[in-house]
Image (tube, rainbow, N blue to C red; front, side):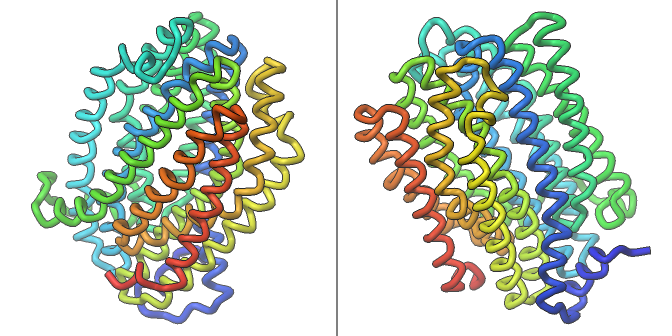
Length: 454
């Protein structure tokens, strides 16, 4: 028997009428599992940061100094994933499941080849990277080893993301959510074994997380390729070799996202370089505060996943007005939730930092940064979810330019001048202003409607 979610999704594909209440209900039905999946991802970061943080400020700083570069490599993998999952969402919306499975086969092969190449790049730069970023000899050794191990597991992370995104594109949100919760449990067990049991410290955190991702990726592949009613690959026998039309479409979607990733993550790396001269305490406080804040913004990414699915299927079904309504519903939903979480973050900032480190100086500095960022959560929500809606429509060029311009012009440039004068506070003030500005840009883009004209 089909559930409410499946019935409402079928209304998109068959041209049925959806009331405003049904659209909101469908958005919530798809959002809450995606939010849980994102929160489980954040919980993994908390687990890693907390376990490593209790080894001392230097251990936390060793991860913080290379984290932005790991985001860069992960961003390439995410862009690759979107190039294929958006195509699948459009084909599912058009009720063409055979073609969707064909794209899935080609996407799996392409993603594993791509992530293997990215992993090799990570291995090649792992040794000198911390020194390039301004890390001192007290943290560079652990930082290099952490980066190397995480790079080795990038193909597992890519497979996990690809399979989860494909399931979400078909409207299946619960399985990725449950598996990501299971990954958190595995992460705790593996981390405890490697960090404390085998006394591997920072390297143990990387091994624990990597193995948890590998097990989850294999389970995710099973539920996608064998159990999914729409996408399981046993229904027909297609080719796995990528074809030019599918690759061209994937490149058209992923290309701007990959370029954005270089420019955006490059900005994050520049942020690390800006913060590094402030010393170990500031590096650790910055890293832990970013992890703590993620509890506020990850619900936005979960709702963004739902928006990408709903907009993608609506566009595939030729229902652009419905896609527009889904975009606004999900954007306002995220803004309300993240604004409330920002209020809680302001109230409980010291307690949030205290979960990650016992160092009183790091807790005090990080808490002050979180209270600055609390005023940016609603704007950040608008930029996250509106961007997800644009991706669902296949509109990635101008949103990528908007992200790039806001990051470099409104955040990094002022931070260069504010940070030496105000310390870490100057950097976080620049970040809060930029996130609100970027949110406004995306609200204007949604309003003007050009994202749906492709």
